[in-house]
Image (cartoon, rainbow, N blue to C red; front, side, top):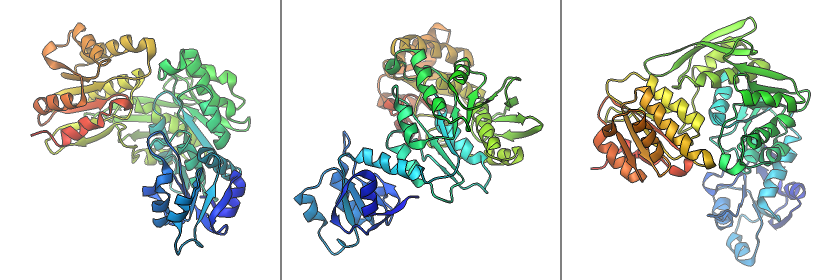
Length: 470
């Protein structure tokens, strides 16, 4: 974790101490006034919805030692006047976001641990969680919290690492060309992992080739002395070898890869048990997360962990206890006896298919019900992609389908066209309507999957299952 005085901070970011003491010491950084830790710096970000400058007094009152602001006026100076002026400081900068990146870049130059960059169309956050779990306790690991994989979250993750950090794991998201390259300027990964390349962000990127190029930005940024980890079963990922200056380790389920997942069995709870093999080493592990597709997540994590010096038994022991980020294939049983698979954080055709298969693998005393919402940013592929998901639901043996949103209505149409009983297919327009349908539909012993793109906010459906309407 970066520690420095306010005056030095101002030098690093090209700012000026405009209030308080240049000797005020900073230990850590936050952009959320509700989550400041004693002694940290609060960086006031002027966002589209919320302006962090309004919370500077509250952040300092809560224990922040320094505020980094891009706006300073008499009103704020008056609000901060008080007995703690000598203990705190305000640093004015031209651009708070740029200042945060500059601080992270400065701190990254002082780190000597391996830095793992992770990107891909699907599975980034879960792979990050799996890798952190796969590394044995002797490794001091700092990893992206939650899904903080954007221009603000990535610098904050880098700033959390310290001199005692053995491995830094940074998840990097992508919404457009050049974004990952920009993040890599801060992260400077020594190792890069691409989970897969799918059709996510097609509407934004315009073509599959553009998506491949964007994911390849991470690969290009790994130095020759580093290592790149690619999915050997994914044909598009294989093309990234051509842009890598570093050697490539292939992972997957095929026999030609370097680190392999094989002999995959799925139990009645939908949890896969998989054998992980690399050279003469192998281990069998039951994953605590449902879905056959998580064999790929496990083998990707194993490939990186092996490179970092973990043994296969250590990796297997860690993976057996992995805890995934909220709303990623989280399974729990509600008080009404319904098993819920909460995968509501995001969705793409690839991740939707995997989640549907996971639900189909679960053995239950009741029915299996899929609650599926719109997938965003698919462009011209949206209509067909949703329709084909409906066909998969119909062919999977799932007994009930509830769709949410205008695009997801095509999922319902695809399911009916593929022979699913129309009485078991319930298209809904809103989250509230879907919750009311589920109140009447779900009974003890049922299993329900909830999944859609983030914009659909289907976590409200999960909350409705936990607290049914009366």
